[in-house]
Length: 404
Image 1 (cartoon, rainbow, N blue to C red):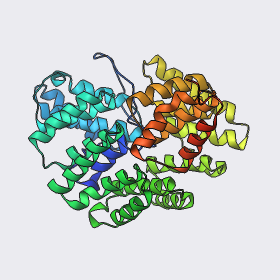
Image 2 (tube, one colour):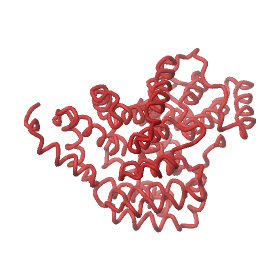
Image 3 (cartoon, one colour):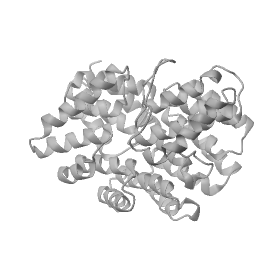
Image 4 (cartoon, helix red, strand yellow):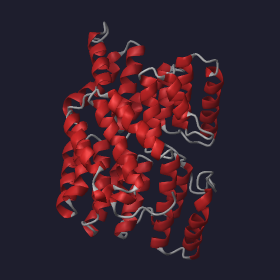
């Protein structure tokens, strides 16, 4: 998917913005890969081979016009989206390199500020990303994707007040129907999943949201709203049905594999997660499924995971945290290291699945107070789901709960 994201939800704008930041299960926002300015990064993509000519055209155009910001922005947007879609964050290094001549300039076009914000957010430089989004909005306040992206970033940072303001600005400045999905997300992220389910069910049927990427994103969140409400079978049904129609929907595939593993349906999880060239996240779900099945393949899969991590470390990437945290904590490779990584990650962003991992690691090591920040976040936002409530109950009942 190397075409530029347009300004309508049905072409993938919301998938890019909210899917990147809000949905921890897509996980691609959690990069820590920071290439040096002269570092050579990925030159081609297995998944992009059918569209690589379009990408090359954009690259040639920006090289032919090195002083043209728009040409650089077009290329940076394309490779950024490709990195998001594939989960291969080396593409993001290319996006940053394309914008290098303008990286420190205080005044850009609205598109320039927005695209720089995308890349900054990808590298977890959240404050400058918010500043760029603010500048973009001051220049073009009618642009829906600018509002939706800032909404998503504020939600990631647990700024619920700011996220709500951006959602309402989207409704007032663009359209009420555009804001309905972000309202639904706010509802299930603040303890009201049943209302969210109703709004998402309506949005799924909205004629403006019939595009395949919009359907991927809406059904992903529709399933999660059911899951948060404790309606596991409904969540599984939504994701299974959608994956039959859209097998390329990676976020839905990953969410389905994760939930199947969580409920002990490991054979089905393995079937869903198994691909010829799986993402790191899907490979780790294969590992968990194998571990649950005790099928004799677990050690070999663990070695594959470790080989990937070692390769990424050699390339000076510190990887997407979530697959590594799951490997360290849930698989049990090194819970102590997993707890340290989870604690560091939680200090920077607040995603429910990361909070669960943080609590799991703290409990496994008998240090429930280490995850006090997760309990504080849940109390402040009102977020609740069955697994989280179980872990919070275990933490408070733990003999070491009074120890700091």
